[in-house]
Length: 396
Ligand code: NAD
Ligand code: MG
Image (cartoon, rainbow, N blue to C red; front, side, top):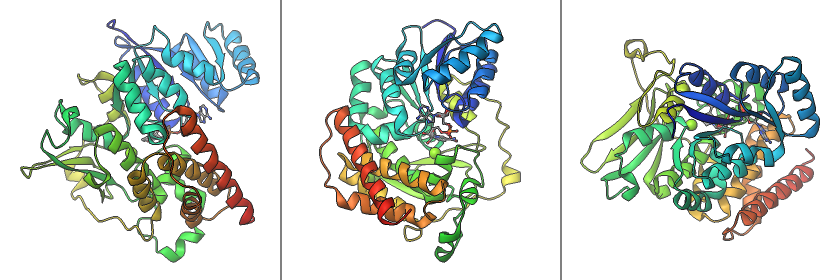
């Protein structure tokens, strides 16, 4: 690896993508942008290309490519434009690339993220849905290719920092009793169950501590985000679902903890700003400045903890059940959730219907083994189809 690392940022126009570019721009002597991808905000992607001068930019369609090429040409930029999933996989696996930030949201990120893994890259994983959908295949690909998988999710990055370097020997081998996954509880932590049917997408997206994309914001509000993270933690750290306990911690200062058999509990703390885990993973095993302000414990003054309420937030229970069922269940959970979140954002369903729709989709379909990527996508498609039927049946 050369001293300057060349980075592909998949999902560059999103919240994680922009935070990544902010950290990269602080260290031009260490990092150079190789490729950027965007999906809908083409003007923003153009501005990012002009600022970071990547070799490639990737957009979803020929029409979008034409538009971006025109903007780049007018500005005298040499950035080349690629299209579609093939373009994403190409810039994820290119031989010149040292590290890939996987920050596309949802199932759309799976193939490009896997392409980076299969090419043996350093993979900075924000796109948790990719791992949730295809956990066993994904981790086998990491083993096979020698890719270095570094978690960007703040909780998983915290756990990674609190584990010893040889944790891959097995959690019990390194003395871990359990993982404590913290959750802010989201904007509806204290909202009575009866009022949840009236909450709006705007309220769901107004997270008290974190500024994030709309899909993960709704997931945080329903606590499906914590459910997806529970599954993510099981794959990343080879944990059983019963070894991962969710702890509601409204201040989002402790990003997660590891509980050891000798009674020691190690935690990672910091201001809720994704540039910390991004900088941690980019520079790992070194440390670099992320631009995040130092933690002011006196201003925070207190840290609170509560047990999660699975009555009001059934998505957490559904995700734990899917984690335990394994096989096709997490891919179906994820796909049904993606459809439900989109329907909620479009005001076609009410907030509590997110969980009921997912539960009914999962109840209709037996769990089957998924040994190929095609089988993963078949489970994903089946869940989307059932979710579509659910919307029709409910007149949404
Ligand atoms: P976002 O909505 O802000 O950005 C998503 C990015 O993906 C954008 O660049 C968009 O152009 C691209 N994209 C969307 N649909 C696409 C498609 N079909 N094909 C290709 N590209 C597409 O989302 P975000 O908040 O940055 O989250 C990105 C990922 O990181 C998610 O998986 C999320 O769960 C995870 N994550 C985010 C945060 C956070 O603080 N934002 C924290 C932890 C994990
Ligand atoms: Mg998280």
